[in-house]
Length: 90
Image (cartoon, rainbow, N blue to C red; front, side, top):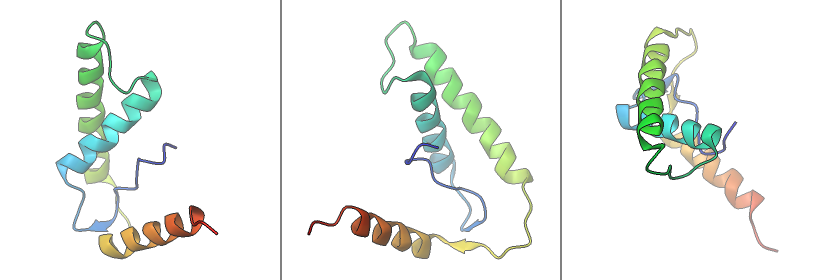
């Protein structure tokens, strides 16, 4: 999985449309191998992002869990700590 795509399910507050679209954009960039598509591919690229964001929104709405929602700030702090440890200089 792309490192920039984060879990969006079971957070309080729920994932925003912007977060869902950002994840869809990262996915399309990864699959297409292109960070910025050419003019010839722009329409297909944008359409794929919108379709994937739409499908992701439906998926997140339909998923159920008995686990309590995770706190966004706590998860973000854990990610920052892992990153600091991983990239720490000696």
